[in-house]
Image (cartoon, rainbow, N blue to C red):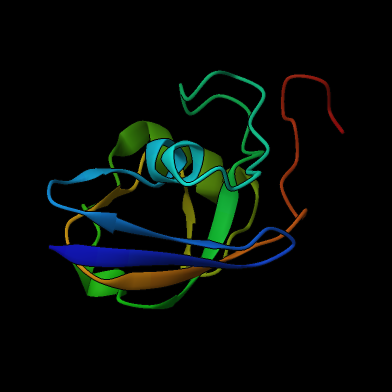
Length: 104
């Protein structure tokens, strides 16, 4: 069993027994995490900053890497729709995401 904590604009803590994407965890914990593309790594609006436990996330795949590069994301930032939690971690939910489909 492990815990994922959300801080910042939207807060919550979720206990898990199996790995899930940060977006699915946020939904499960009723944490408001903005996402426009439905979790397909196309818009970048679900970007979160990992405060601790980044080693407990899945490795980013090519689609996520591409969006993170476009967003000029920091090394501790991930797309919640693509990052799968595998252990304890804490992340910051903000509104720094950008919808790449609309250029906003």
